[in-house]
Image (cartoon, rainbow, N blue to C red; front, top):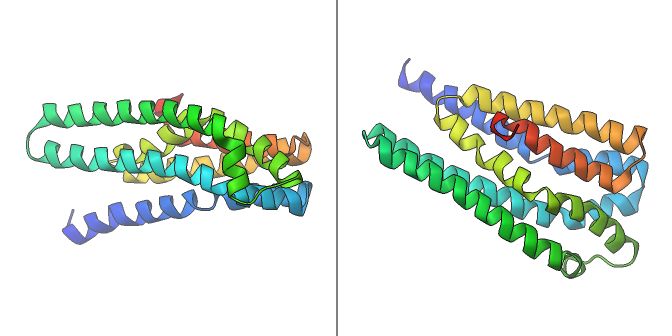
Amino acid sequence: MSNRRNFFYYVIPSVLSFALSGIYAIVDGFFVGNSIGDAGLSAINIAYPITAVLVATGTGIGMGGAVKYSILNAGGHEERARDYAAEAIWMMLLFSVLLTGSFYVLSERLLSALGAYGELLVLGKEYTTVIILGTVLQVFGTGMVPFMRNYGGAMWAMIAMMCGFATNVILDYILVWVLNRGMTGAALATVNERQTEHPALH
């Protein structure tokens, strides 16, 4: 495989994966906005920074660990590479516990600081409570994708993200529109979608 072909083989799936990861909140907003109305859509938008922190934590740890793993593995330091992969997984677990505890305790204050009050605060808390309790799935769901990609599975990583996106849409439709679970349903769809993204979570 030529360098140019190899480059695009990894870049195109990676770009598409990141593009999909950025529109999950839009999917939740679409279903909730058409089910609950403007208040529900506004609550999801206000709560989005909390979700973004969880996703960014997993992505940052996973990407850093995967890059270091690839560098060491390519240099013939397989044992040190495996150590970095293990350390990244332990860091994801540690941060999952820390973020779950701190965000659960501070969720109402964080939402208030972000501008939620009254009905928006109630709806935002309903949504973020489920998201926060599913922190470990969010962190590992995004954190393991770079490892999958750097193990030579760039195309599989993209397919996993696409499956996660499709799962989110289907579950949003069922939980929000069919079962009328509102904000809780939208949050459950997002958390379960993160589980679908990586087979290591099953």
